[in-house]
Image 1 (cartoon, rainbow, N blue to C red):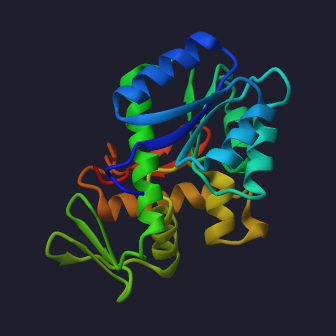
Image 2 (image 1 turned 180 degrees about the horizontal axis):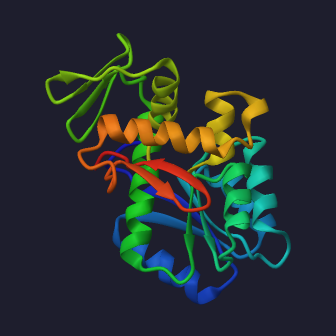
Length: 233
């Protein structure tokens, strides 16, 4: 994706006022916006436009937004930012488990929306480039080849489980990862409901990597949903 070319984005939203609001905000950031007001039309736009990001409302007139996500994931890994007036955590988790990267609950502000868009676009650029050998956040540096972790000048000793959990967060930095996704990735399918394991090991990582584990800046909790590693700005 060239920085000199407009970034194509597909917005799938049935409310005209919100589509206009999003299109204006994104175009002001130099992006090209393609609009769709139904799930079927949205899938066609995604297939033909090959966007760098999809912004998707869950409450569409012809099909549920989660079904749109599932169908997209059969042939596309384009990042999806979900918009929803649904506030129940189960519905957010369902959208994320289906393959969405992030969500915003309506109503939302333009600044937060654009910030989330930038994070997802940065992640797409990073994923399309060659794999990084070193990942950094704050004063923490992880050498993914030698499997060494430093905080400042001090080497941090992580257990194998802690290191696998950290690498899972790094691989999807900026994305909300559900409890189920993390448990399956780190412990395996038989542990997919063992949230207590996750809380304990997240606590260990914060103790070792955050300046103030009680008020984490990088390893963030999405209440009732999962966790997110704050992407590098």
